[in-house]
Image 1: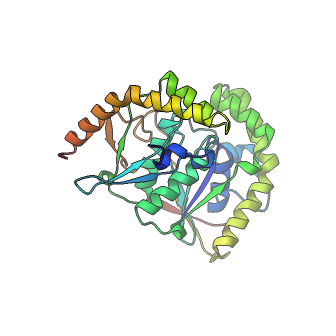
Image 2: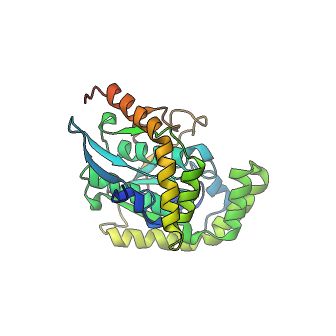
Image 3: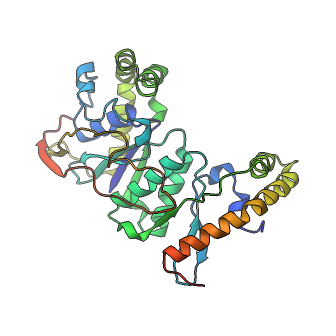
Length: 202
Length: 118
């Protein structure tokens, strides 16, 4: 199964949820700001990468965990994923879209806007990190609900985790522009496969 | 014309992929409204195909290069109101007629590029 966490900008709440899901962040306590900032993709995604499904890792049940930004187009994301799944006969049980926006507070919105939209990272990042810490328990609860909904998770197994890598330049091969005239959909893979084992603290 | 499914889309229909049938070569044809967020929608589609391990050549994304004109724009706004919908439809119809040649030429080019005939 593919579990896709999504939010407005794909830089904070969805990254945090995906990280909790994979055991990169603890689910039972609020991590410090440094732990959040060290996450791959945290406060990194640019406007021109919105819509891309970023692979975060594979959990202990071998489910693939992704996150994406869908701006304020929740319905568009849901309709497109459903439509494509119908066209290509992908069973609905193969993917799960999880909206993390419900847990985003105003502090996160303000910090995220300053950091991602205005480019004021020095001012925005501490604010959005504070907001993430304030919303952390709700995000962790959401992940817990997702896991209990899917079922099959255990406390014992290690988590296969993806190696960290740089985001690359904006508009690079991990970001697609508007097709000029006609263009094939689908491009090359942008992430590496599972690299090392990560012990889950759940 | 107004029997076409995408001309009576509600707001909840944004992003809905609408099947329009098959062409002479058996290719399935769909319509999709990207509504201002075109690049994000292209990335969504391309990325979803990629993570689903679907071959890149299974889907062509064709940008309708015609763009909006004032009639289509005004028609779209009026169509949202139940009272002004008939006027909106008239305006939208005029807008489509104005762009029809451009759209038709674009379709012909795409068909020629894909090796379709007729």
